[in-house]
Amino acid sequence: MLALANMASFVLGFTGYASLFFLSLFLQQAQADSPALAGWHLMPQFVTTTAV
Image 1 (tube, rainbow, N blue to C red):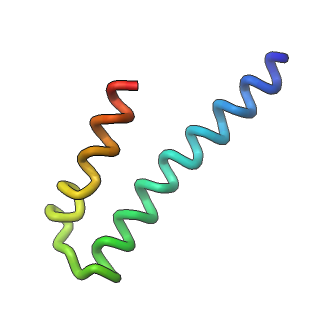
Image 2 (image 1 turned 120 degrees about the vertical axis):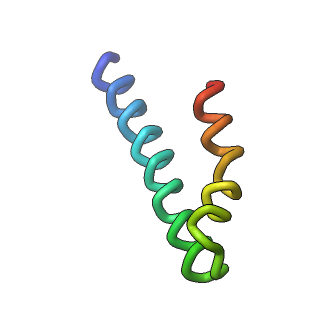
């Protein structure tokens, strides 16, 4: 049971941080946003992650 919880925690953490990484690349390269604007677009995800 503990191994399953550890695996779930790893997968959720990995996908959360990977999405931030890839979304920042997408916003800057495909959408041509500046780094600061891309950061503002990702702010709801940061706030949600902090709240949860």
